[in-house]
Image (cartoon, rainbow, N blue to C red; front, side):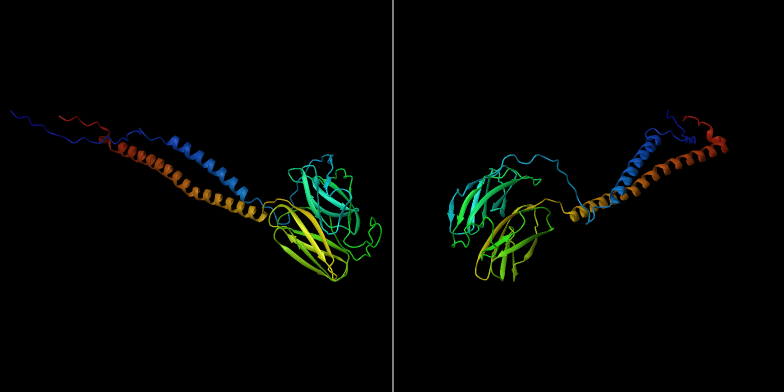
Amino acid sequence: MAVKAKLKSRYHSGRLRPHEYTSYLPLAIMVFFVGIVLAAMTVSSFAFATTPPPQAESVSLSGTMPEKPPTTGATITSPSNLTSFNSSPITVSGTCPKNTLVEIFKNGIFAGSTPCDNNNNFSVQIDLLYGQNKLTAVDYDVLNQAGPSSGGVNVTYTAQPPLISSLSNVNFTNTQLILETDAVYRGVFPGQTLNVPINIIGGNGPFAINVQWGDNQDQVLPSSNNTTINASHAYAKPGVYKIIIQGSDAQQHIAFLTVAAIINGQPSAATASSSSSSGSNSLTGKILVLWPLYAIAATLVISFWMGEVREKKLMDRVISTTPTLGVRPHPIR
């Protein structure tokens, strides 16, 4: 015998099903903290971007604690005492304390300078005066403090018979050509102009002065009479450079001088400023892009929450105005 069953549709109760997998409170807390972090990053990036970079006329200062002068002096080992020469320039070498600058003097006149190498040795070419020359060496530390002077070495230059018996006091009426300048140049930075005043003493004008800067750059300076001429140069890189100054006069007399120039290291202000500025602008731009995304996420969370609240109110109103919606339907028979 066949059994017939009658099916009836199930009526909706009108009640919202509670959220089982979504909670707006954790989402709200997450959005709040993300906003705080984003605001802090924005403030810091704008503060960094608005900090003025170093200006071109600003000055960088560095300090060095005072130290005692060198206690060990430079010693001339070559040439030997009482050596005679018939040509100039000559090479003077010896020992010295490490990290010092050695200056050579001839009869008290500055003759040349060179840094002491890592093996505690120095070597420099100098020009000689006609007749007797007393050579002395003095070492200087980084603060330009002098160490004890060497005992001195006596040599003789016999290129031509000396006009006077003793040249301990130089007679500048002699026809010998002499070049003179400061002992050493410190504290110049790459890109800055280094000025070297050169005194022309003796000889017969006109004069031609050739300056080899030690970085494959030469400069020729003419002069019509005994005067002080100024040679200038800008180095591209830091380091210790040997400046070779050669002079000649109308009678082909030759003078020679070697000077050490110390060029300090310094980062390029323009490059540092531009790179830091571009970096800060890039960071600020990336942070500003995140704000619209953050606003969209926050708006979505608030919109879904407000939509659910509105839906619940509408459903409650429908249930209150339609009593049959609140009646639980009969089960299927």
